[in-house]
Amino acid sequence: MIRKDAGQGRVEAVHRALVLLKIMGKEGSLSVTEAAAVLDVNPSTAQRLLATLVGDGFAVQGAGKRYEPGPEFLGPGAARNVPPLREKLRPYLERLFERVGETVHVATLIGTEIRHLDGVEATHHALRFGLRTGVTLPAHRTSAGKAMLADLPADDLDARYHVALSGARGRGKEIDLAVLREQLERTRRRGFATNFEESESGVAAFAVALGTIDGERAAFSLAMPVARCSRSDIPKFARQLIGTASEAREALGL
Image (cartoon, rainbow, N blue to C red; front, side, top):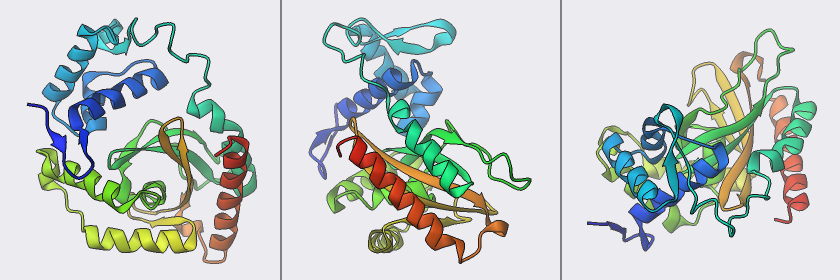
């Protein structure tokens, strides 16, 4: 039986299938394990979704049992000439790196998790934060996640966490939604989000949401060892993040 999310009025199985299609279109392929992690479902559920896409011609199983876009997805109506999000934001990501001199990333929001889509590492520092490209993390523990969650309408936020926490994997998660809402309100007031050792020990991070681009919510973030982060740095980092994000939004017509 297909379950409808009462909080958002969407058919969850359809939403999950569309998320997998977007990832295949962007990344080229994905495995059952990767699909299960992105959707926060059991591998058997991810396998059934992918099998359905294969059966309807929207996906094919390629080398190494990875799933790739199928003929229906790649048909004449598909906009294959549209540059992927990574390419659109890369010039502004590099611009941000030049301005702050710290490791920077582009992240996207998938459900209640973020995925680091692209990054530039500050290799000139002996003590630095390494690239996390391809890594997924809980949104509520990261600066990029909090920046994007703060952009969501209240009912969308509640619906996402209702789905995430009501599933089999969600029962073990400890998320204080009242505290999260307070953090998101503070993020909205300041215009940027912070993360001081919430996602990783010894790491300080800052982020600004970019809004929705090609149907995906995105954010710029910068991260550094907390030992090198002084309070006097924060206004400068926030100013550069906000300024670069504004330039990207203007150039992309957002």
